Amino acid sequence: MSSKFDIVVYGATGFTGQLVAEYLAQHYKGDNQKWAMAGRSKDKLASVRDTIGAPADTPLIVADSSDVASLQAMVGQAKSVISTVGPYQLYGNDLVAACVKTGVDYFDLSGEPLWMRQMIDQHGAAAKASGARIVFSCGFDSLPFELGTFFVQDEAKRVFGAPASRVKGRVRDMRGTFSGGTAASARATFEAVARDLSLVAMLKDPFLLTPEFKGPKQPPGNKPVLEEDLQSWSAPFVMATINTRNIHRSNMLLGFPYGQEFIYDEMVLTGPGEKGEANAKRVMAANTEKTGPNAPKPGEGPSKEERENGRYDLLYVAIAPDGRQVRASVKGDRDPGYGSTSKMISECAICLLRDAPDVPAGIWTPGAAMKDKLIKRLVDHAGLTFQVET
Image (spheres, rainbow, N blue to C red):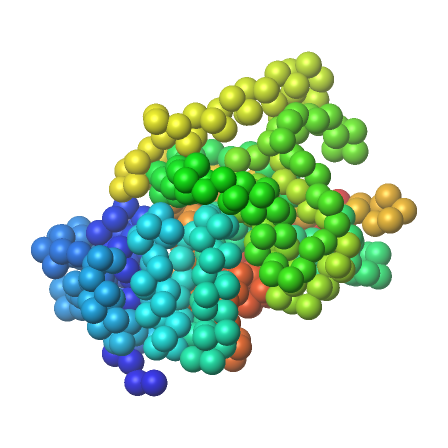
């Protein structure tokens, strides 16, 4: 297929979309990377283009989620589309369908497991037939967690001689504003469940994104616990509901290298003793606020200074049957919801285009599709570090 643009950033006038466009403009300037900005208003697109310092001749495409013909026209000009227009269950159906039909690659920031399962069921076979690579969850939902698990399992193979059937993902530090888009996606999911209570069981299923495969019972992760091996209390992690599902899907897509009895959970480490227990209870209370009425709205976000002062530190612990452990960390140099996320999804698109063009068609997690090549690109360009800890 002959395409005018390697990448189209759809939603470039939104808060996160603008950051993605700015990243491409700054880091791939004069780089033979043919890309375009797309959104509902040409005037707003032109304003964003000028604000971020993109070249004056950066192409602008008018496209709207409520206008299927405009989406199809946009997709027809692209090798790949980065979509930052969520909640995807409200605004993403027609774009995914257009990419699948046309054989165009698609990347998003979805943290919406029910919608993702719907897309897998509707489009999985058609994507393989058309040549489209559909890649969900390319931001903080759930890329560092998926690749952290992949990375620590490589070390487990080296040390234990085999992957571990038990991995713990633990948040040690996270500084930054919770994403308004993530909050809106959570609210949209809650509203969908309220309309159809049959979705409750699906949402609770840790293997929601692995059709026709059900693995072992997983830790509930719904209350504070004392983890003696980590010498810390831990609290429920608000993003575990999506991340754990993506990691089980990644395991399946890779052919079950972690085994079919793989157990994985995510929690927030809050420290030892009574103080750690109290902190864990505070984290639980804060989780409710993050998706409540006071949560940031889509289109809102932190200042440049706040983004640059943000960071995250994630721990992965692979546990052998005899109790031995190997540990690894993934760290990011910006706030997770915006600064780091905008770099990650941009590099996912570049990686598939340049470094992993032979990835087969289908519906993917980014880590399963691009593996070590994506880790290298994120380390080289996106401010992430992956380290084995002793």
